[in-house]
Amino acid sequence: MQVVIPAAGFAKRMRPLSLTKPKSLIPVAGKPIIGHILDQIGDLTERIILVVGENGHGIVEYVRNRGYDVDYVVQRKEEMLGLGYAINLTREKVNFDEPLLIILGDTPFRMDLRGAMQGGDFIAVKSVDNPKRFGVVRIEGGYVVDMVEKPEVPPSNLAIVGIYYFTDVPLLYDALNHIIRSDIRTKGEYQLTDAMKVMIAKGWKVKAVEVEEWLDCGTLDQTIISQRKLLEWNSHYREREGSLIVPPVYIHDTAVIEGSIVGPNVHVGEGAVVRNSIVRNSIIDRGSTVEDVILDNSLIGEEAKVKGSARKVRISDHSDVS
Image (cartoon, rainbow, N blue to C red):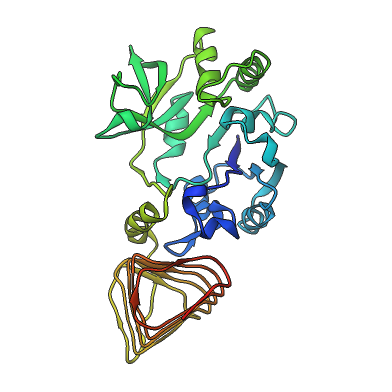
């Protein structure tokens, strides 16, 4: 089995953090977003094929350092033409004789992937309260028969979460080639859902499998909300004399915490310093310094500095706010 992870998007809704690093490498609850995804993949495969942007070599390095055999393609700015187009770029990298798992590189989740794959081809879904905001599936006789993007009248409340399993890999890439050659687009882009509709029309049988958890990291606000759930699985800290730690938190052992209250729902990265401050519902990346400040709902980039007064701060790497 092989895994393709598309991780090339610009993540405009994650700015300013995404100005200096890919969205998949933004730290949340102790590790980059893509790290939580790799936790779910585990030892299901040794080989991962990445689709990264022109600034995505850090993603390749991170996944390799996790012990995987990594191949990758670079999706250039002018090639940002939809998920279907991105997957098609991996055509020369995949083995057409092996099953293929596709997982979007920016959405942490929890599910039994091994068990789901034993049931054959699947599209992962999650029951949602407002399916009009998502792509949703229509099911008949236990199988997916259609997919609709942000429907006015949803055929179900099962939103597509971005995890797909294919045993007939040639059929998938034939369908991708068809929609691109025929210029079949939805909202101006070549969509994987349109390719899967072609596959269904050709007799492809695919089930919908519901995930246990699907965590949205699509915006900075939603990332902080999702971090609280991720900290249930990846909390880590040790007590610091003279400071109060309020879990759930992730505080790297090399971080310096002095005279502060940290938590709940806080990530403090490697080598960061929090001094004489109150920090809650926030992400402080490695090497940053926070001093004499009250922070809530804030994201501090790598090697940044924040000092003085109460505030909500969203700054990118190497910034200075004082």
